[in-house]
Image (cartoon, rainbow, N blue to C red):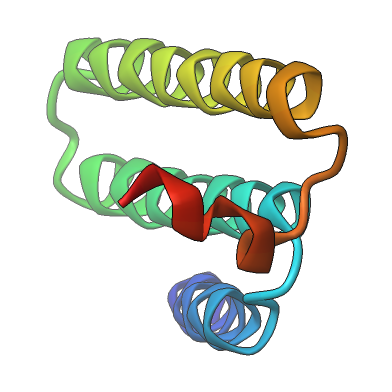
Length: 93
């Protein structure tokens, strides 16, 4: 039951990421939602087989680092360009 819910969360996060390409903040929130869904899937998998939960802590640490990196890029781009619209970042390429 919970595996189906976490898979549905994962798919909705990916769909939200694909549909919200206008704002960088919405894209980052969608990516964090995908990370939370993957965390739930991983936790359920490890609970089912009674394995160690050390990898869950490593996964959470990497998820937090990914979120901090995304927010720091968002702050940098907001200070540079003044908005978080993805269309204004074409000057980066």
